[in-house]
Length: 465
Image (tube, rainbow, N blue to C red; front, top):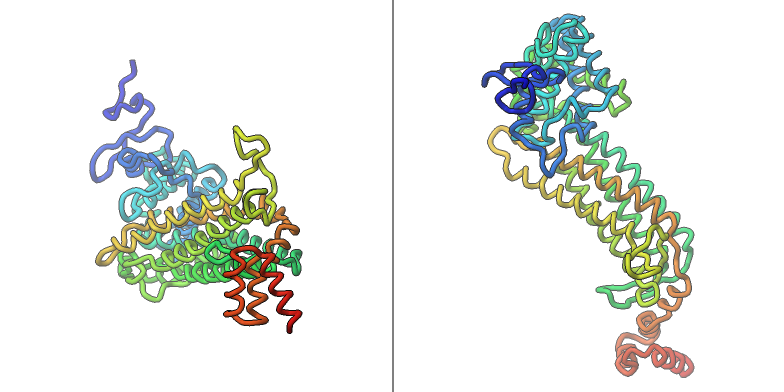
């Protein structure tokens, strides 16, 4: 029987031995990551959460920062040209294949995000050494994860910058869906023309409006909230790269500090991403709090809550169809009951509401991280960005389904809406407009909910007039 290492994971010959400051670590022989990544895998079991590999936009953002750092280090003479070439080739190789095997750690792993930075550093060092220089995995020569891949920057500024890049990239997808939903709602409002609809306050009959007034109002609210979120996303262009550790610039070469932003924007432009990054006005403030990410999460929560309200409205307006509101018809997408034949549930609005509710939970997580930063550094950056990327993905999926499977096939029940708009509340309001509140109130008391009495009174008073 083959000997097994002390962790009991597998045969010794399937592992290589690496060393870090805490001692020896057994790493799978074919793994591109190293000792510190393996420690993260062992002490942060993925349970009820995702692996880092489930967030490709964040990994890609980290790789963009590392590519820019390598180019800058070559430009200032801190790295030889062949080192940068090997690192860039390693990055290209990573971007051409799935991330699952290379980034196995828990998506949020202790404070500070050291795990993700070292996972990226180790993978790049091993791939660059192996593919660029023919060195065995785990040799870390000629390129070392800390001494070369991490040169002139740290986890703090590299990760924070990557978080901003990833959030902006993810926001672009959600923004497109939100703008599409606004357009869909406005088109539906236009098609509705002057079709009347009964408005309600506190779920009680109120006044008659146009269907276009309601749907146009929802579209306007969503447009305003989308613009607010876009403004917040734009503020993420300010990053702290070069403010190593806690915002101090003394820990990187002055030449690196001067050139890294231009190099990073060039890398982002090459990748087809927004490339207008600028350095934050106060690097120490950027270390102490994640306010720009917090602001975007706050705006996304408002969008989520608006989607919950709108989804609930769709459920109410489509309820019945015979014993409920029955004002609109939703596209039939799946059977709604395992026991009741012919029943169709509003599952698409419900799905969107569930996505939005989950997003609100992530927003609460983001808010909590602000409460628990201390002194010079807020260490909860991984939790912030993972929760924020989850919010963006959840809302994008929820809005996309709502658009294509519900709003684009929405229909008004013209007969029901017309009848409702001629009901008790609108008739009493017509009476009030012509003869005043007191007189209308007296008729309302006499009618006791019978609209025919109100209409008769209205006709009688008009004849007298």
